[in-house]
Each structure stands twice: as C-alpha cells, then as structure tokens.
Length: 282
Image 1 (cartoon, rainbow, N blue to C red):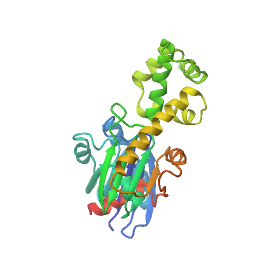
Image 2: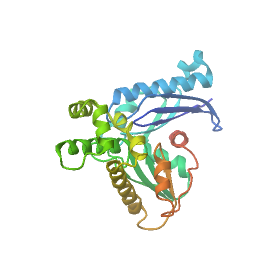
Image 3: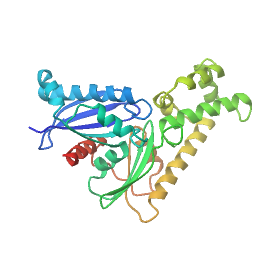
C-alpha cells in the first residue's frame, strides 16, 4: 500500500500527516520548528519526529520503521527558497520519494486547490502568493533578516527596536515600551535577548502588540498593515481575485482589511497542500 506523507513546517512548529491512496488521513504528528534555512539540522530532526509520530498512529509503532523508507513525501517548509537548502534536506531524509517546496506553495495548494486567488500567510514569518490557472507566483518569504514584513517575528523585532530608540530619546517612551524594557531587565537585557533570539522568540510578542492600544504598539501595527497591503496590492495589479488569510496572525489581519478586498476562507490547510505535493511527487 502506498502511503503519502505531508509536512507543513514553519518557524514555530512542524506538522505531519500520513494518508493512504484514497486520501484518508491515517495518522498525524507534530514537533518543533522546521525552518531549513535558519536551522537545517533542527528542522530535519523535527521533521523526522513528526513523521514517526504520524506513522506510528497510522500503522502502529512496530511497523513504522519499515514504512518510513517507503513514504512518498511532500514538504512545504520555511527556508526552502534559500540556495541549496531543499536539495541538502532531500539527501538527508529517508523517504522513497521527496518533493520540497516553500511553505507558501503548500499553503496555496491547500487554501485554493485549483482555484485562482491570493494567499497571505502570516505567522512567525510571512509570505504571499497568487495562483492563476495553476501557476503560482510567490513574493516575500525572505526571512526575518531581510523581510517577513507583517509577521509575528517582524512585529516583535520592530517593537523592541522602537523601545531602544525610546531609551536613546529619539521617540517618546510609552508605557508599553517601558514594560518591554523592564521585562527584559533593562536595555542591556533587550540587546542580550536579540543576540540569541530566533524568529519564533521575537514572535512571542506579537499577540501583545496586536492587542495593545499603546501609541508605540499601534504605530508598529500600522506599519505592518501597510506592508501587508502593499504585497497584496502588488499581486492584485493585473486583476481582482479573492484573498485568503492564513497562519496564526491571519485572522487578525483579515479583520483589518474587511471591505478592501474579497476575503474568502481557506479550502484547506498547508498540511493538506503538502499532501497534494506528495501526490504530485508520485
């Protein structure tokens, strides 16, 4: 029996699903972050942990090891657009056949299936894509150092930078910014945090920022909203299509853009899209 594996991996976590030839999901699993650019070895290990959990649920733990090498896998992963990352990962995985794409490609296939539209994926990172007649154009998704505008990590980094600017006197110190500085043990603590922080660590601050009415927090959110709008407008330039917001911050942004575009719910998840990738790989 052919078994298909779908992996949806991002900066916060990794999800796996094993399905049979009829598309029935037999088992699911989860593990930690799976960004193959920022932490390739950690991502590989988390992919395997999630896979083995899903396989054990599907066929039983006694048979899971034998089935692993027979899986046809589709992986939608953060960091897959970094040079060489996807190829190296494929060589390091034990599956019979493996297709690796960005998490945006998996998200589009899951959210839109064969339909036309735009997907705005906003979680720890951010990426945007448009599908027309099965052809997908992706923008963004360049990682926190160079992009990921509007993402949870971007929000967290931006507000901490703003807090340090307030310490220097470039802008007003607000209660929200002072609380952040105090939470980190002072300005030096903020710097220390930033030196070791990964995108998921910055993203922890996102709910507090999005839920705050503090002037500094709302200024950061307004900048994020403007960046997200610019990305979607760019993809809308040659015709109006529906927009689907997904990811941990998707609902928050969708509410802010109500009435601006035709916003529709996703038909499926990025994990569903990863299983579609697996079927295409077969």
